[in-house]
Structures are given as structure tokens and as C-alpha cells.
Length: 425
Ligand SMILES: NC(=O)c1ccc[n+]([C@@H]2O[C@H](COP(=O)([O-])OP(=O)(O)OC[C@H]3O[C@@H](n4cnc5c(N)ncnc54)[C@H](O)[C@@H]3O)[C@@H](O)[C@H]2O)c1
Image (cartoon, rainbow, N blue to C red; front, side):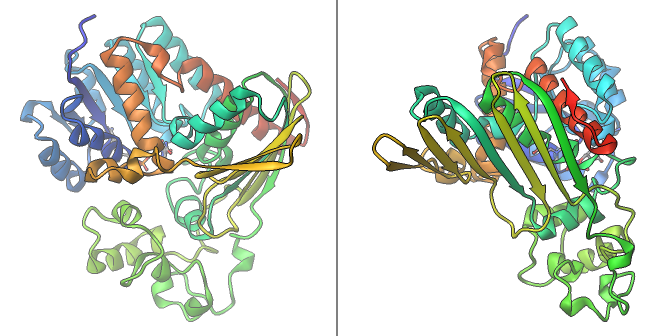
């Protein structure tokens, strides 16, 4: 197989994720070039085509049109919604493309297995968007664990603070609020965390259990004077979940990249129109959401180590928090700082992992744009493109087998939550 020096990429779905990953080509034109796109939404496709100077014959409205052509690039980024991963993954694997597939692989467990079998059978490189594995923070954490300075890892406590308005945006009003339309919460959001914990443990999970509920974002919690749309709501001033507070004004709670999810041109005028017409402007107590707003997962690993994980909506926006308890020390981490305490001398050493994080310290605006997930967005692409350029799949940290193993854990945890039982893996 000939690998071009500049890796050529076809992008399937240039929504939020497709656009971000593609910025790697703008940051490093000597390493990657976007040569094709399939995207049905014109207002997202046109600026993307211009940004990457894509030739007319490589612009498609549907991934199937691109898959019906002969292979036109070294790799494909499949960034469609959760329930639209299976078919393109199979089609492009059969065409011989190396694949970056967004997480989760699929909301159906057997489909995840099918995807993994196909990429292995077709001998293509395959990575899943488990960006947390790639951050400078995780790299340092793995390095510290590898030194054995805290002895054997005995247990881990991990929190995913989803954030109150982020929950409302993505998991109540937005794309991942309804299980039948997308995925259950643990798969949509916390497959990252289960995968990351599994990566840190580096041994086999043998038992898993979970509890979780949709406690708050329910119709019965709607204030009596609330309207269906926040724009017209008498209770709006007292509501932290108000769409007006999240999306409108000069200091919205949402970042500009989140506003772009609502409209390709997120002017106040366009955002108001979206809030009037779509569920993004609907009362959080009046949506079609059914995914949990808090969940815990307990895991037991093969040498008896235990891990407890909490996902909750009810936090400010902040980074994940982790405590790792070892036989000879403890580590506390918050996505940037790592505090290592050793029991022998009761001393604590603090590492700041931001100094090595290019997505924070670089002057390149495109690299800075890829700072999401602690720089994981940037480093995932760096590893994927490097793996292709050097024909070395070992540079991929979230490959088919690792991802399938942690996806299985997620499906089993959900089975536990739904059936109130501990599941053996
Ligand atoms: N790795 C992460 O941390 C992370 C974060 C957020 C989302 N995701 C995952 O990434 C995926 C995409 O999420 P997103 O937020 O970018 O969604 P999005 O809706 O912004 O983008 C999906 C794009 O696919 C396009 N599309 C629809 N049908 C298509 C077709 N037939 N052919 C080609 N394109 C088509 C849509 O028009 C849209 O632009 C999801 O699976 C999501 O769960 C991953």
C-alpha cells in the first residue's frame, strides 16, 4: 500500500466533530489535506469546501455517493451521528480507507463487533474518537503510574462533571437526549470515561454494576408558570437552564463552537429563530429526553482492584476529577494538574501538564481551535495521521480491540442499570 507523504482525507459529515478534526490539515498542511467531503447541509458544507479548497468532483451530499466512487483518499473521518456509523464504516473499510470513526462505534453492541471485524478483515488502520487517551495529561498520568511510585493501583474514584447547561444543551434538548434517536447516556457521553479508566487500569474488568436515573429533567419538575419556549417564559429569570441564558446575549453560557451547532451563522437574529423553532429553545422540563441525568458505575478488575465512576449533570462546567489510590501512594488529577503523594515520606509532588499541551501553548490558531478535551482532539489526529504516514498502527491508542473492550463494558453497565444486577464480563 502506498502512503502519500501528505495524508489525504475524505470527511463524512462536517458538523461539529468533522470540522474540528479537519483543522489538523490547516494546522499542518505538510502532513494532511482534506480532499473530499460528504455533507447534506449546504450551510455547513459550503464554508468547509472553501476552507479546504476541495475540488468540485469530490463534494458529495451523502456518504453513499463518495463510497460509490473509487478510493480517493488515504483515510476517511466518519463524523456522522451515532446511529449512522455502521454502514459507512463497513463501506469505507471495504474500499481500503484507513478510518477515524467517531465514538460511540454504534448504539448496538453487535454492530460494534461487526465494524471491528470488518476493519480487521480489510486490514485498514482504525481509530475511534476516544480523545481522552491522547492528552498530555493522560500521557503524564500513564508515565507516573508506570514508574510504580504509588505502588500497585488498588482503587480509583472518577467523576465526570457534565455541567448543568451542557447537560441541558446536549442531553436534554440536543442530539443525545433521547435513547431511541441516538444512544443511552453512558454510551453517548461516558464511553470516554469507561474507556479511559480501562486504559489506566491496563488489566481486565471482570464484573460491573450500575445505577442511574433521570431525576430532574422531567415534566413534573416544570414550574407552574413556565412556558413551552424559554423566549416566552415567565419563570425564565429564575431558571439556570433557560435557553436565553445559554445561547443569547453578549455573554452566553455556551462557547462559540456550541452556538455553531445551532446555526452555521450564529448571529443573534439566527439564534433567536432557532430557539423559536427547535427544541434548543424548549423548556428543559418539556422535551422528548429520556436519558439519565446521573449514573454511577462500579467495576471490579481481575486482581481485585475496584473502580467507581460517577457521571452527573449537576455541576458547574469543569474538568473530570480522578483519585487513584495505590498501595504506596495516591494520585489526584483534574485534567491539568497531577498531585502525587507518596506514603513513605508523606511528600506531594505536583505536575502541571499544560506546559506540554500544544493546543494551549501553540501560537497556531488552528491548533488552538483543537484544544477541546484537554487537547485530545489535536493529539488524536496527530497520532492517526502519523500512524498512516509511517504505516505504523501501534501509534493508534484507541484501536479496534481496545475500543471494543471498553464499549462492551459500557453495554454491560447499562444492562446492569436496566436489570438491577451485577454483570460478569
Ligand atoms: N469524540 C468526542 O469527544 C465527541 C464529542 C461530541 C460528539 N461526538 C460524536 O461525533 C459524532 C458527530 O457528532 P457531531 O456533534 O459532530 O454531530 P453533527 O450533527 O454536528 O455532525 C454530523 C454531520 O453529519 C452530517 N450528515 C448527516 N447525514 C449524512 C450523510 N448521509 N452523509 C454525510 N454526512 C451526513 C450532518 O448533516 C452533520 O453535519 C457523533 O457520533 C457524536 O456522538 C464525539
